Length: 204
Image 1 (cartoon, one colour):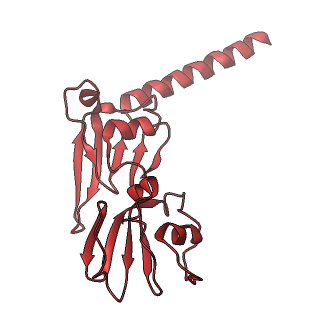
Image 2: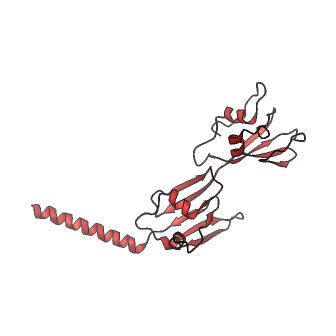
Image 3: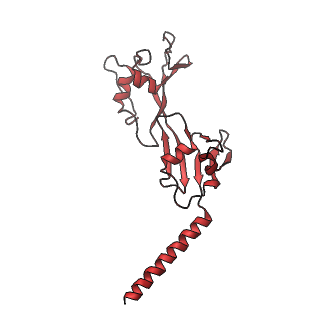
C-alpha cells in the first residue's frame, strides 16, 4: 500500500473503500501489490458467507483474490469492514534477469501469476550482442534456503527443442557473455580505433 497505517472508520466502509483510504497500491518492485488481500478479524468470520474468490484461512482470517475483487466489484468479496480489522495486501512476486540482456533487472508479476524464460527475456528487451544463449541458467533458492542452478539452453528453447521453463518467485535468470563474442567485439573495436587513427594521421 502507498500509505499503510491506522485508519478510523467514520461510518460504514467496505474493503475497497478502506484500500482507497490507504492510498491504493505501491508501484515499485519492492512494494507492488500481489494477488491477494488478507483480512484478520479478532471477533472471527463465523457469520460470513464464503464467496468465489475467497478462502477461509481460519476462524479469524480470510484471503481474497485481489484482481477479482477490483475487477468484478463482487459484493460478496467487497465485505464491510469492522473496527480493529487488519488488512494486509500481499507483495507481488518478482523474478530477475541479469547478464547479457539489454535491460537487466527485476520483473514484477503484478498482473500475471507466472512468467516463462522466453517471456522474461522479451521483457528484458532481448539479448545483448555478446550473449551466450546456450550457457544461461536459472539460480533458484528453495524454501529450505538451499540454492540450485538449472541450466537453460536458450537457443534450443527458442527453436522449440527444449522446454520453456516457468520461473518461480525470486528466481534469477542469468545470461552470460560469450567469451568468443566478447573477444571478437574487442578486436573489432581495436580495428575501428586503428583505422580512425590512420585516417587522422593521413589527413595531417
